[in-house]
Image: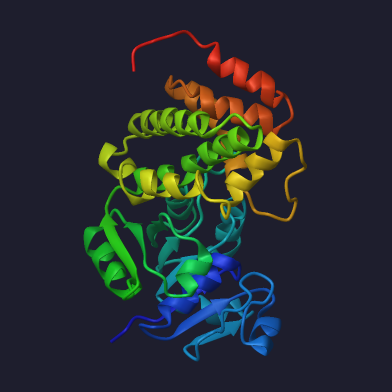
Amino acid sequence: MTLPVAVLGGGAFGTALAVALAQAGPVTLWARDAAAIAAAGENRRRLPGIPLPAAVTVTDDLACAAAAPVLLLALPMQALAGFLADQAARLEGRALVACCKGLELATGAGATALIARACPAATPAVLTGPAFAADVARGLPAALTLACRDPAAGERLQARLATPALRLYRSTDTTGAELGGALKNVVAIAAGIAIGAGLGESARAALVTRGYAEMLRLALALGARAETLAGLSGLGDLVLTATSERSRNFAHGRALGEGRAPDPAATVEGVATARALPALAARLGVEMPVAATVDLVCRGRLSVGAAAERLLARPLKPE
């Protein structure tokens, strides 16, 4: 029997997951604007042009949606802790699969740590990797990492959430999967700044490479496995978001590099992640100059020109 699944969050990625997973069984999509989505037969605001399959039920009744044993949390990272605290009684005992990327600004914690804190009887997992919502919704081929510390639970989730076009690779390294998805956003902002400022493709390649080295240093310091960062949730996602104009984080950085105001309506998780990193890196004794520079530029405390000078003036050292 196919496990019922609910997606909590009617943004672009949440809607895309509901559309994709409907191939394998019924899916409930919880969204605040459920009435408008149901009436239109698509999420015109977040994912226009993609019709919802008949197997997707859209509701604004959270109690109804949360009754499913498998819940995909497609919520902004900075809203996750509050949502979990408010709805813990409803969510307890479920498989809770975080589909957001980032670190909580207040604590530097990842999504599975927040889930475990709020719902200790739940099964935390994370679904992350290189996939744009529109591609997933259209059934284009994509591959993601599904990380769950419980191997048996991870295997069950993998079987339910994989589709013919959406290939899932299983891992027990939730720390590595979360950090890859969170930290690559910061590097993508750096890549966007470089292109926007006219610094060239070579500068972008250097920033992505050195940014990846920072990702790996921090992840290893927090107990992640190097191979996880070299996989879909780390390097794979970094390649996508640091090179595509469709990446919100890259677009944010490009606007900064061009001296324009970034889109205020876009959810750019890398900005909050960059702000959370200096304290975390300092506590662990990890050097992260690219991430620290991105934070300063995003907060308007350092110009793009000064940022480039700051990084280029660092002492020479072995690779």
